[in-house]
Structures are given as structure tokens and as C-alpha cells.
Length: 296
Image 1 (cartoon, helix red, strand yellow):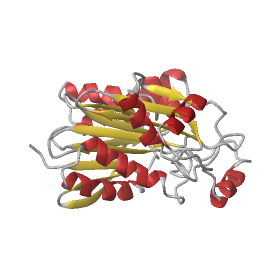
Image 2: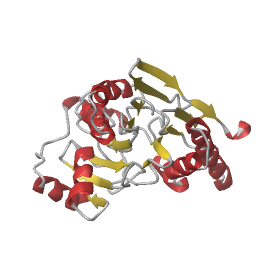
Image 3: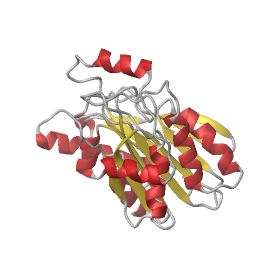
């Protein structure tokens, strides 16, 4: 049985895995470690695409989306459009543990969070408001920027060989009020199953939803593909769908982890996607393989 592994998205993934790894080393469950790693990013005011200090939507409101999934039981929970509560991933876990539902949204998600003891607070900081104002005139902020709409996805394999995962984000900057991306959707932004593997996504949520990205990867691993092969398959699918629709492929990226401790990462061209991986031997950075439609 492999020792623990935890992986997370983007440059801030290094911070997430450094928080999660000691918990796995101590024998904590994968989901506990993944949530802790994600929460460290939700708390960081320097990161404007997740949690506290996230950049607001078109009217300036910060709304958070998140989901969690346990690979043993397939228990899962999610929130979308959550306002004034910074720890969206932890609220999603409470949805999983305390309700018969998978997804709570908007005012209902906020009321549930209050009932579960989460404090209400403003998620704005002077810096995030200034960033919102600076980005406002631009019709489309850069799609691949981690300061725009990139999530933190954390996938973990614990010492018992069990998987858990978290995906959390403040979503697309200047999005229309009510817009929900892939991050809180089980099978799109996240899917975790001990009998297949764990997968997560980041990038333009609409395109990830369109192909059911994380579920495609998990099922490919179930069929025998490595995590790397499965991630590349999902990128090829996203590229093919974009060509079919007659549009330029949007920037999307995927990461995956299987029960053998193998990892994978792939993205569309120009995404500059990276993940961080923590094992007992230490932390390493991996650059995702990029695929474009011409070389699909």
C-alpha cells in the first residue's frame, strides 16, 4: 500500500499541500487533510480567487462555491453562491454530514452555515475591492490567471489507502450574479472514488461542466488508464467539443490521483497549469502537459 500523497492546484497549491501533509503523516483521513489544505487558501487575503478576499461578481458581491467528496462512501456535499462565510469547503462538508442533500445554494446555503455555527463576515478587503475596480473595465480578464477564477482543488490519499477531495473558489471575477461554475458540481469540478481514483478541475467552468470533466477522468482510471492518461483524455475532449462548437478552446486544466499514489496533470495550451505534490519524501512542483486541438 502506498504512503500518503496530497496534490493541489496552482502556485498556492504549495501552501495547501504543506498544511495537508502533516495531517496525513499523523494518520488523519484524506478528507480531513484536503479540507485543511483548502481552508488555508480560503483564509489567505493575498489570494483573490478563493474564499476571503475573493474578487466580486458584476455587482461587487463575493460569492463562494465549493464541494467535498469522500472516496470510501461517495458521500459528498456542496454549496454555491454562498455569501459572507469564508470557509465554503467546511460548509460543504457539513452539507455532506448533516443533511440528506448534496448541494445548497444562495440564501439557503448561508442560513445553513449560520445554523452550523459559521460566523458571518465581509469577505472584502481593501486590496480585493481595488482589484475588482481595476478589472472592471476589461471585458474579459485573462482566463488562465490564478487571480481571476482559478480554484484550489486538493486531492489526498491517506495512509489507509483511502481518497478524499475538495474544490473551492470565489468563481469568475465579474461574473453575472447567480452564475455557478464547475467547482461545486460533483462530477465536473471534483470526483472521488476509491475504486477508480480522484480527479479535479480548474479553469473556465462552463467548459468543464460541458464535458463532466472530473467524472470522465475517474471513469478512465477505472478502465485502466493512468492519472496522466486520464487527464489528457479530458483535455482532448474539451478541445474537441470546442472545435465542434466552432469556438476557440477555453483554458481548462485537470489533475488526478489514484489509489497507487500516481498523479497526473494536463491542460489546454497556454494555461501554464502547475500542481504541487507532497509525499513523505517532500514537496515537488509538476508542470501540466499542454494539449492543443492541432496535436489532439
